[in-house]
Image (cartoon, rainbow, N blue to C red; front, top):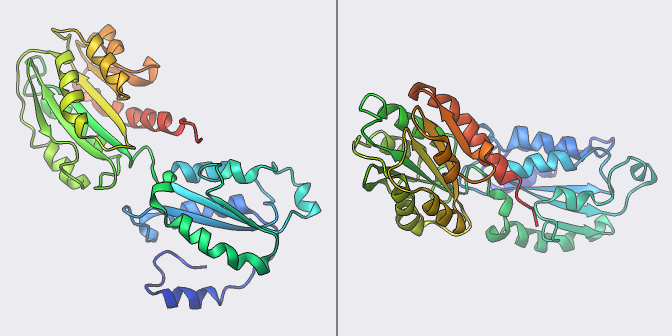
Length: 335
């Protein structure tokens, strides 16, 4: 009826709303949420990356189709679902097979903040003020946080002699491609890079660049170092120097990329990082040792450890890594 970017003024929106006519039929709320996700919350339809996303479902009685699955898909893309229920269910709706707790199973958090109810439409105006207050409470719009827009992501890149000048650009391209999946912004995901040999240096400070273009340009400005391989010291450096500037409420992700065995111990530094809540992924290439990669990464190893035999094959790892990062995020409890 009205797209996000159809009217630039409040009066235009209100005038258009008053012209909307009822369609009639059953309350296919699940299909409605699907339509909202697919057609409204897209950049081409006026969705803004920096603005929290919220959808308010006004529902008379009960839905006549499944709402839980579409609502979950909406939540996982960062849409805060609010549900306003009016009146009760009809006998036909009660017989639809929809679970009676469909509201709590569909909203962003089942704590009462995202749901409102009134016994009759004529009393619905009393819900306006509390609804507006809740939608405007950015601190509580927790479903705006997704696996792609709420991470502090640091790549720990092996710059040792075994990598070589000819292969180092493949490492940087891998970092750039993975970063391209995330929503880099001042209020979104922040990216940092550490390069290490026997020593460590910060190549890109965490949060220094707040646009995807800025991060990508910074990645390709990193110069190959060459030297030994002290992976354990690099993990400790990253924990102490990079994640010390991490923002509260964001997941801290460390992605190690190495092609060989470390000259120092990796177990204790990795355990110390995990103890502080840092999630570690390990990407091994060519001569990287499986036991070391397993010692670095979080459990389950099958979802946090990746290995390729050649630098050119790194491009196959990126999508899998991002998929697993999101899988882990979306599996977090909602309560």
